[in-house]
Image (cartoon, rainbow over all chains, first blue to last red; front, side, top):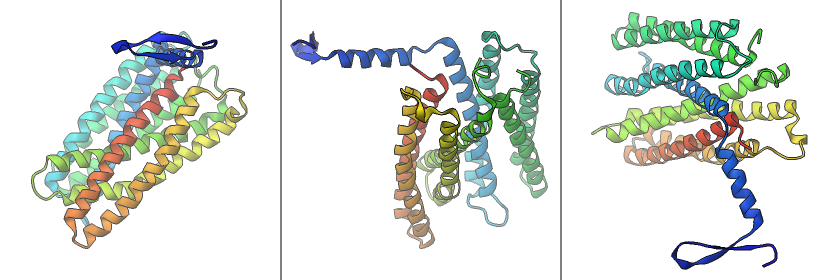
Length: 172
Length: 156
């Protein structure tokens, strides 16, 4: 019993718990209790993942509905679109809320920093082009499909530009 | 804060790593979405099953490679391999990425077999394989969510 302590457990059973296990559990507890900044950063990045994942799914949908060799029938394509499009919206809102919260929470950043302002403008461009792209795809027809692809390209490039700004943080 | 403690040398591998991870989750989301819609659809869902297989074959593998190779580049740029104590978040990332690789490999093989069965007209068998690929994708998505938390919040 020199290095172990006896710990009572439920149902009257007793089991041994070594200090090593206690240490590991404490480490796990610290791991879960990360501070507000870490949670905000996680939620901000998680939102970005939702946006890019949903946009990737929408590009898969564009490829799967090529007029020459469609993989999906129109009915399934519409249902798939209705699954992915709301996720872009949820991710975009999360991205904005947690991004602004982070900028306020972290002393080193201000909302009027150039790279943050540029990200906000790109966020608006991405939201506008994404919404217009969805409308173009909903109204079927080859000419509207081309317009939809063009707008979705603008949406994707804007999102990638935001990602570049978030990593390089020019001027920060 | 993060920018202040981060060297500029790691920006490119970090960008590629995050982009690769986002594309991995995007392709997995496509597969899971197709699987859910296929389950809820009464009647023929061959198109959704084919979409799942093609997404795994043409999307998941290249995205995984981008994510994993850039992670290695990032690790060497940051000198994390030489650190006396490997950080917990890095261990979680490695465990998820490397065990995930096995699942990605299984999904790849199953998708190739499933696509061949679809071409041969064996729809029932292909749809069973499609469900297995969908379940693997759900598992991978959950694991990557945990890894994403560990990588961004960097616990302990």
